[in-house]
Amino acid sequence: MALIVVMTMNIYGGFQADGLILIYIRETRLQRVLSTTTPNKASQASLKHAPYIPLALFFFSSSSPSHGAVQDFCVADFKAPEGPAGYSCKMPANVTVDDFVFSLVKAGNTSNIIKAAVSPAFAAQFPGVNGLGISIARLDLAPGGVIPMHTHPGASEVLVVVQGSIVAGFISSTANTVYLKTLKKGDIMVFPQGLLHFQVNARGIPVIAFVGLSSPSPGLQILDFALFANDLPSALVEKTTFLDHTQVKKLKAILGGTG
Image (cartoon, rainbow, N blue to C red):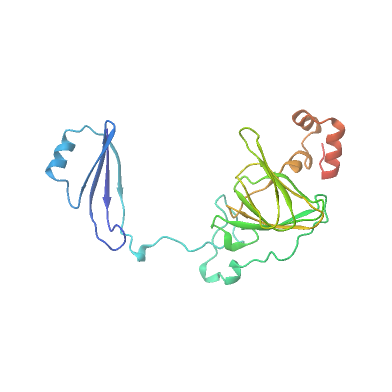
């Protein structure tokens, strides 16, 4: 048995509805007694004979516009340190329209080992998305280019191809099921948060795609770099990947790893 007492004030903005809501649970059913002032005699009687355990008492203050706590935005203040919840907010007086505008018109540099480039517009580059739960990035893949197997710990991703063709896919974490598709111009694919996924140029022409992410700071971990671009001892890499010593050393040399 339970009793929840809620004092309500100024519900639905401007409409005075000061009163007392009594909610209690008895056996398997929920009974609710509402009075604009105090419970009536029937309600008092039913409560009197119903054993209960007090659970909570909440007071809600007036919600008039003058007491609104909602902020329109939280433009990142790069002069302040970044915390677990993101960047601190720039003072509104210092915010300009340029904080909400970013250009991804320029192609990224694909002259690298993966023949691909990611141009991010995350909170660290695009202050206007800080605190909004969104971000975007541009993908450029030269012929033969690949975005290696990677994951975004903090966001789901939606990709749209605007030029060329991409072989894209992700792997589920439960049954290791592979979801694979060749995407052409105008196609869209979603990659759930935290799952390993990749993109490969499917044809011999440059690819352009854009990805939207459900976080201003989605995070990124590339599997190949996590294994071969650091000082994780080769012996451990060999044991955990079943690759032989020669293969591990070759990959570490390519990606700059040691150990």
